[in-house]
Length: 405
Image (cartoon, one colour):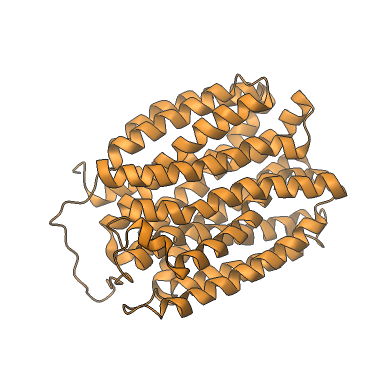
């Protein structure tokens, strides 16, 4: 198989995402870090929040650089420094240090390594962006499923420091290898419209400055921000919440794996489905369903089966949110500047990732419970859903065909 064969590009992108998925297992580190340093839940959440914010900065910078220099070089840099940040986290002795190496170094370079596979694959498969992009982004969720029990076992057998160091070394080596396969499609690769291969025209080919001036951009950005404050905050606290209400430690950790499996499945299933039913309907539907999940968490208690069910639904919603980022970005603003426009839209993820874990932790520290946060989360998701539905309405003001409903 040629090095630039389309299927190999997808395999390489998915493999890179599998490694990046370790970001979603931060919740497993929270309890050991509290035990080691005596931090509050809000403090123990801060490195993850900084990581999410830095990750977004990396997405924007990496997107612009990969538009200029190609995905291979930028992903190589990102993969190596992501592993380095994880490795250095094993030597943490203070909150500031962990925020710097895990949060800033690891976060920015994760953005480099994340944006390149997704933007590259979308360009290789313009006729099925949702499905193929979903397969690649699936890796991020699947990585959490694979790595969650591994992290738990390393911490149980050794300590949290060993987990960071050993995985950091692995990520540096494996990431450097995988990044070499990420290349852009040749200029003469043209896919014509055919039955089952409809290529949706973008609203326009927009520069980043032009995209930022549109109301459509800010409606989409705000919808994702609200949804991801809820989703990323819950991701960081779900293990601690389950443990607190009486769920056994391993069963609580397995909840992350359940979420990860359905997170990954949602990216593929909803990516393909959105090719048929429309992007904004898919985005809004995931927001409304997540509102129900948040409300459900206030009543199920320590019923493990019910928690796993809610976790699986949460995973599907989260996966839907993530795969729709590059697809909606390409259909709203075109592919010429997809890397940076995708990164700008994705900044809502980073801010949501910074605010969400801290908000959950702060409300818990103040009230002694997560119940109030779950109620607030339900309202935020309902608002996000209506904003998502409004994207199509706002897009009709453009002369070109609007993003699919």
